[in-house]
Length: 557
Image (tube, rainbow, N blue to C red; front, side, top):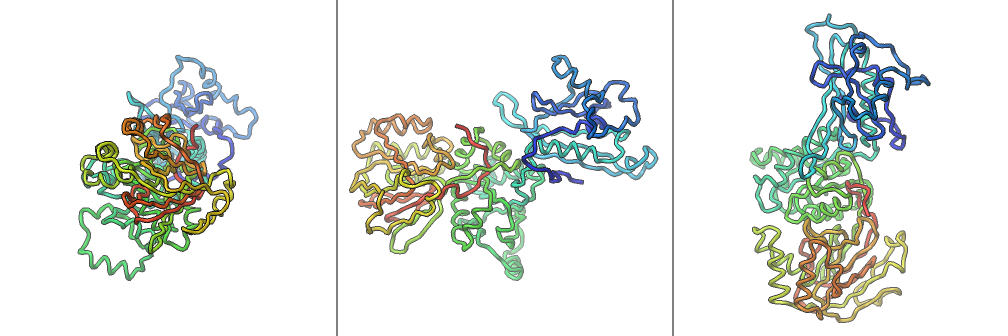
């Protein structure tokens, strides 16, 4: 009997505790002692307090009516209040709703001894299950500390009181949000991060040890897809296999293998049947997902309804770090899952890109665009991928200091003061070579070293690219370093990227805009979007404010 999704109150109603129900019910925490659950309004915690001796011997306490004006005078609750400020009071156990991702009431039936108690208790015993992940230890990291309390059948004529307490726990834990996902598609890249499928930091291990359990505890149904090749996630976004096609593919794949046993996604369902998509891998897997959605005719409808979650199992994981930084949370899988399980969402600005080549192509972006030194470092260091994230540091010294290049381009942008946020989506991008509309600013044939467009705060977990960025500020933040910057000053900028201190360097310029156009005039660099290599050629982009919903906190300044 699962009550994890039974919360039916208005999400805006103030949290309350069912004092009458809590006063009628006794629970056991694994010992023989009887206790009651009460909510401490001063600390926000739900506390397990022992019953007094007289109360324990009572077979069936008086029934208190929740509508009674004098309910707060109920003896057991008054006893609790009397010691609420006493440091020496006895608290057998406690949990804080902020750490709770799920709560339910489970029943165990026992027909072998029907004469033990009267009523329904003869056949069933009930247990409160609260799934909690509080912070603890030296590093203040979250760890599972679940609570399982058995109801005393002598004071449980039915389970109405038990359901009332579970509903209150859910509401205090913000699990009654109507936007909370009901069905998720989890997509895993087993090869992300360079550690192989068996890596303990890889997506498969993280899914089996953390994600699967937490989703089940939160009462969130999900299907899992382990990608088998590059582009698989993109293909899945547009997949609409018929039963005949699915049967054919099953007959031709040689049967299930050990590597495929984690797949629970048949790939028959259209993604519109899901409420959320959770990606496990590097930033590349989300790039695939967004491009797959971008190729659909119903892209706008999907992006307006779908919620997205991300666990960083890749090398850099800039999106995950940015979302957790925005949420004021530590960078780890448990924090990402807390937001997902609780259904917390915040909007993220996305961007529409066009590469103006012989065959124009368009893309949806969520993270960053790089051209010049950063793009060279990102793409050319792939030959050192086996070194992990340090590969970019090595290549930055080689390409930026030892064998330095200069990059010439024409750059135009639309400042934010020429349009309101509500009008940004209506910006019509000009074609290359056509006169720019009024309000655009152009730099003719400038020589750059760094041209880096930021949509989020972090390009990687250890690269604090743009401290001033927010998830939904409605702006591109373009970082520019010109060719006049010396090698020493460039090295100082690069060395401060991990802390955000490069924003204090005088050679760094920051251009805020809502749309831009870049026309390379020297064939010495690459177009790198969200860490993925695009076609060469002129490129332009416009911002789509709050274009996607991500599981995240409310944001901190």
